[in-house]
Every structure is written in C-alpha cells, then in structure tokens.
Image (tube, rainbow, N blue to C red; front, side, top):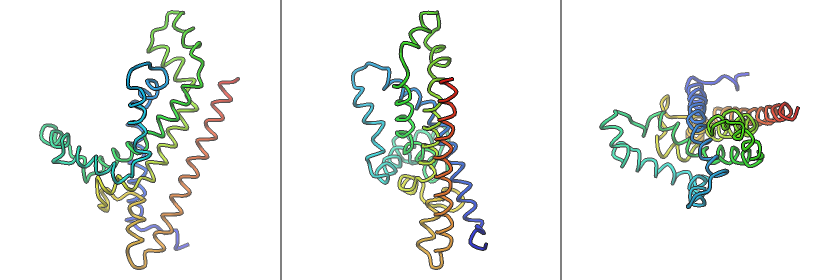
Length: 232
C-alpha cells in the first residue's frame, strides 16, 4: 500500500497537470471551433497553408515549439516584452505558460476531431435552416454545434489527454519548477534523474496511464451515447 502513498510534491504535480490541462482545453475550444469551421466550410486562398500551420506542432519536435514560444513570448520576446511592459503579464516560467504550451501542442488534435465532425454533417441541413430565416450564427449554434457534439467530446478529451502528457514544449518554455510549472511528466522525469526515485516514477507513470485510459474510454462512451441520441 505504501506504493500508492503520493508525496506532497507528486500531489502538487498531479494537481497542476489537471489544472493546466483543463485550462488548455477551455482556452483552445473556441478558436478550435472557428478554425475547424474555416477549414471545413471555408473557401479562401491559402487554406492549405493555414491547415499546415495548424498541424505543424504534430510534426515539429516539441522542444522546437517550446523554443519558439520562448523567443516570441518570453519576457524579452517579440510579444512577451510588450505583454510584460504594458499588461504586466508573464508567460515564460509560469503556470500560465504551461497552459499555453499544452494548448498549442493539443490544438491540432482538437481541430482535427472538430473538422472531421463538421465534414460528416450534411450542409443541406444548414442550408434548410437558412431558408427558414435563421442567420449564420443561429444556424451554427442551433444546428451545426449540436450535430458536432460527438466530435466535440472526442476532441476535448483527446486534447485533455495530450495536454496532460505534454513534456518537451513545457520544459523548454516554462522550465521545471516544483510547485509552479512542474507537471506530471516533468515530475516523472525528475524522479528518473535522482537516486531512489524509481518508486515515485513508477507511481506517476501508472497514474498517467490510468488517467489517459479513463479519458479515452470516457470519450468513446460519451460519443456513442450522443450519436445514438442524435440518430433516435
């Protein structure tokens, strides 16, 4: 039973990981819906370029993504210096930066799930709503979004799981500060680098696997239930 007795540092890392992941998904969902709609329904020049940029974090090494965030949003970065000078906002080496790094890395998975869900919706349903006098926003929120619910659930949970496991971009952008930026993967990494850290590393490894499996199972169950409800 002693195996499952988490230390205060491990509890802090787990709590911070859940907090960061929740905020990352919450912040990603609105722009994710907009970008998914643009890529699915939009007709504009440069669509392929936008699609490539959105999915770039999937193919770039996470450390590269983290370094780019540091260069742009660090306290002396192109954008970060302005944020700190005029708004007093610091992202680098702060938990808010961990949220941003997780959101950037999870964003492609979220957009992909939302776009696939949008692609499966018959545009004729939206056209029928518009012929009845509904405006674009009303059609989107009363017709399109309800039909997207299974895809939204899948995307949100996949993004949450990806955020929970984010390592490379996070450690590069916000470092590995216990109690401030040390998320679950970073705490696990730290334990593998110290003597007698094997038991703690294994505890966190098992926790990460369990949380990921539960998230994926919940995604599948909820998506099936909403799909069955929509069919009925």
